[in-house]
Image 1 (spheres, chains in turn blue, brown):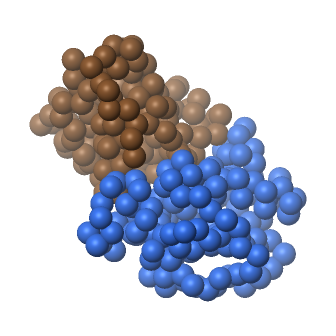
Image 2 (image 1 turned 180 degrees about the vertical axis):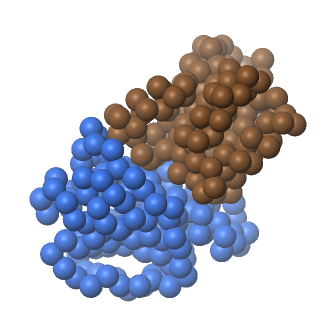
Length: 147
Length: 140
């Protein structure tokens, strides 16, 4: 189960960042703490739990720049919040859909904070960190259920 | 021929992204009206006629499914085609959307090509017809 979740997470993260934000990520072997903001979403269904995305300010601004063509010095915090929430919403939905497209799941409205908090490591917690030319991304999922 | 589009999403940024993607896809858009949730969308429709509604599902106050239900119960609005756009795209969820009267479903993440294809199918114009005179391509 752990391998399937990890592989599906990785594919979903790459797909969302490449398709929506035109950013190509490289996996990092070590955890990074160089993040400035996070967005979280809860999900219920055949798997239940929470997913968080951690972003550096640089990559959040690049995501918006690439989607909307705004100059980086024009980008406000509200736009970074919207973009972070949308990213975690898309990654989570894409991830659950890829795990099992026949099963319905429900997503909460995403939340956002300008600091990143930690989730205690545990047997159902999976974390991945990525680097890119534009900054860093981390994704953490705490999931319970059967895949 | 160009069309009036109502975009419903609680995120300003995503509304701007959807609007931009529709524009660069070559789909001819006359007026673009925006609403932050289903309630705002119904209010917007009292003052504006639109040819198609593109709505997110997961929104506060009134979500996309509730908006669709309200539209189908209103004689004035029930024939406006609705395209739902969401990450929640399980087979059952999509079937629910079509059973409730949605004419299209766009899965996030999406490409401009996918958005245009579904818009053209729902409005009933061919991709070729919409392509004529458009040489801009999908240049991000």
